[in-house]
Image (spheres, rainbow, N blue to C red):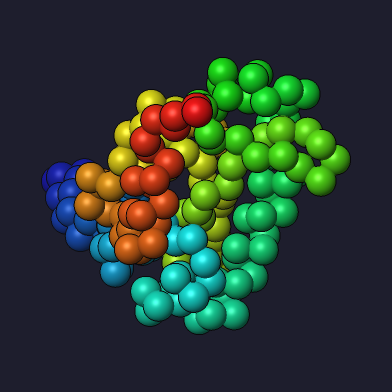
Length: 164
């Protein structure tokens, strides 16, 4: 009999404790249940106008993303090699006469701490941008906010350039 009472007590205790213990385990959303807002911007003013970060925060993030672009963007010895990889009209010259993909915009995540990464034209002219890892951020993605100027930039850079 004593063993039966102990088993019953253990089952009741487990029934009370298990849901509390499992509440912190994977799969559950954070208390806010939302992701950090992400937007694609071309300037610090563009970014701060979205209302998620201050102008100073946006400016600092964009400077850091430009530094990342300068350090990590691939470089090419000749324009033809860059354009073969990046697309016609999607390359720029560096101060030391190398050629790299043209920096067009920034993906800014209003997380804690906030982050920004440099963005480039999509190689096939899709409506959006890509990062150095090859991830694309298309205008159809409803989780992203595209500033009006960012839309203008990808529209201009998505067009096939003509040589005269």
